[in-house]
Each structure stands twice: as structure tokens, then as C-alpha cells.
Length: 109
Image 1: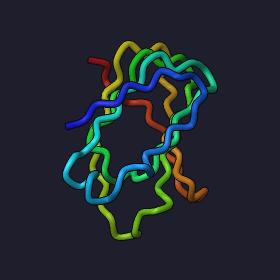
Image 2: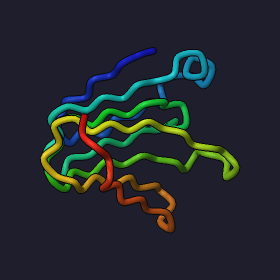
Image 3: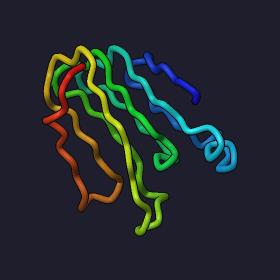
């Protein structure tokens, strides 16, 4: 398992540099630290990410995941963990405007 720690505020993160073959053999764990209000992360190849850990989020932080490359029949299974998050408002947004998830019910651990 690879672990990525993103701490550059407001930076768009893309994982397109990894080949499909590489990602298939090395599922990703995404960890965020200290994301402030109105900062965001954008991840491509999201279907290869197995666990997403959101740490130290300010209220109303915007987390964006790009599902535009997915086939409609793809099944998505993620584990989300919120750690030391100040606010409850974390949004998972697809690039397909008709789909929007509001994630407010995760238990901090």
C-alpha cells in the first residue's frame, strides 16, 4: 500500500501519472492533513483508491473526487475516516453534476 500525504493548500492533486497497471497492483491510501476552508483536492483514477483519511479539516472544506473516467457499472467501495475534523461538512462531488454526496455522518476515530 502506498500512502500519500497532501499538505499543499489549494493545490489540485492528480494521480494520472500512475499507469492503470501500477495502480491495480498498488492500491492507494489518500491522507489529507490540515486542509483549510475552501481548499480542495481533486483526484483522478479515483476507483483505484481504497481508503481515504481526512485529517484536521476545517469546517466546510471541499473535497472533490473526479469520477468522470468511471464506467457506469463500476462498483465503488471506499473506507472514509475523519480524524480531528473541526466541521461536519465534507462534500464528495463528482464531475457529473447530477450526483452529489453530502457526508455528515462519519464518526471520528
